[in-house]
Length: 311
Length: 303
View (tube, one colour):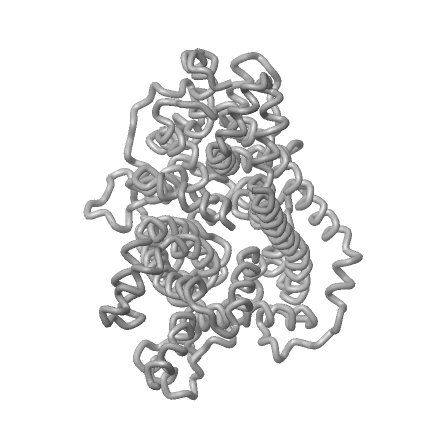
């Protein structure tokens, strides 16, 4: 099978070329179409001969552009705002998940304590919970229970300062969405980081402790720098979920905290789809993950295999 | 004395943030959902105002033909997706397990589909499946074949194809990693004994990869029940109920039909199904470890 002369087999390279074409093709197609006018997409005379235009991107980004594109008289798509919301939510929730997650993973790996088995079993169990299952309770709780009461001190103060409908609830705020994303991603991050922390030699930590470092110092100064690849992998996976998630964000956000996936779905479900603009927004949403993939594919693959093979 | 006390508290201090957040935002909601599933609950009420109806929601779903249809679609989707992806992914891994120049670049391109937002994946495929302007029908036109109504008559197949496109690389990469970590000595021995390539695959490579393959398949299976956005964007569950998987039906019951109680009961059914799968995976892992330990013990006894 793996004899040296099979490397020169042209059929083999044809298979690889076909695979690459199949996996990258749709993305390329979207990329190309996002530079076409709708007329060109629909008439579709030929795939590659067309005048590239950035009109679609101008229309998508019209609320953050510093000039007014002349082909637009009304800026209906608030893409820029949604992009900023997505960015805030994804970055903050990723950072929080990582910090909290690696502390928990460290405790689970290095210490024997009461309740350890329960915790590690339940993190494994919640990994399987689909976002759709969380939809109903999160909608109910975030709207009705996780509120600062209007009669209470803090809620009253917030209402007096910012106005609003009385009760201040988590739903419709960035922090509401961030909270559920952190909770959703924690089990996965803990699981992945455990397999990296196990590999840190215990003697290093003991040496640091002999030199007089406290447990937190040992953790932040010795352990963390050693598991950087694991942290990178976990960060990318968390960011990917927080950046791409649609369902829970759509249930929890309001007009001002809408994220990009929601905006795309809302524009898709209308009867007359403006393909060019939609493809441009899709492309903009896809750019950060694509950049991560190109920069850190090795970490992604390590994370993926660590998650499955050592699970 | 004080340091001993502090040492005993350390693990709890490390655990506390994660435990608190997961208790507030995962465990409590799940309990809340179970509680809500026994109530006739619509979104404008708080849960306290909703009327307690006992098992009514569960019984209603048990007899609801739409729910059966949706469950059937979900199971069919999960089954076909996992089976086809496993066959293609493992097959490709066996085929491409040799020295290739630029393998890391290849892998980068293969993981691209997984990293892109499901919403965007749905968008791309909806465009390609479009009855008139879509890529596939254009291609069929240009070679003179009749057009296919991708998202109409063959909606479930089309959705399955899109998922296969997105997730086969996952299985490919994992099985390639498993394949390359196989003990070289076993393969060498087989080759010296004159085993053909096919015999090597059937009798040596596949059995040795089996533990990883089963875990991968189970992970993929659990994920297949989470798919929602791709289908939402491509077909919105239609036509009819032909692609309405459970996750989608839960979200529609909650937001369109405004029946939170029924949606909660449905979530519970889905959760029970997944729980069984996870327990299965966990039990399998345990059994695997036990078997490995036993084998090790045997080897040590012999030596």
